[in-house]
Length: 231
Image 1 (cartoon, helix red, strand yellow):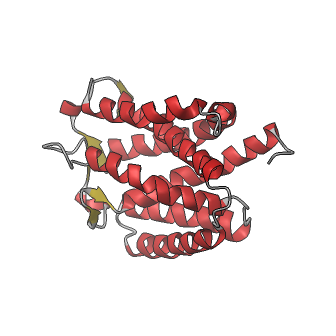
Image 2: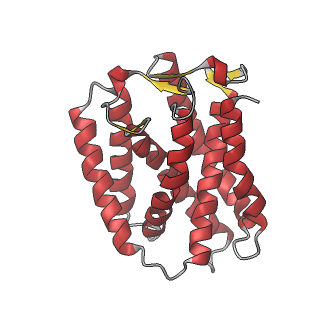
Image 3: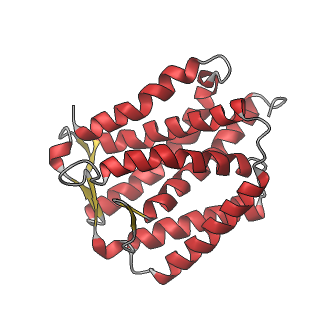
């Protein structure tokens, strides 16, 4: 198996096996999860394909199986299904095991932080495609869902997003060269700001956020439709 493949397998094994835990019972939400992940994943795969073609980022062949969908390695395609699964598992675990944790203030802090930093970075680095697209997308989504719609679940999302940063930094660290001779996923220096969290471009924080936020909106909507009384 490829290095990227092992990363994907490691990301899904624990969350999948623990999905049948009685307290969390994450398997009960699989339908809502699937309906939430797929449409957003398609958009991000199109984004990914376009940036790969234009060499905004790319992949080191020695760490891949060699199978592709378009210009994307199959491992990269699976990333947009596996990683959100693991993130939403954590989202549900936190709600089940910490139901009384106060998340409103946390949500306000994250909402203002993402919006302000996203607008500043995205505007200052308009010529950097990855910086501008990831940061502005995160900021605009936050404005729409947090400031305009004022969705009730944003605080819970903020809590889980901050917790998810721990495994996120591990996974992305491996993919960006923390433990390999070359990065599994590389980025063009012309399209990122430059600052990194060890080997991870800062833009990845906004990119991951921009992927998970609309998925959460759809996930909460489909959960509510399936169980309107509970939700």
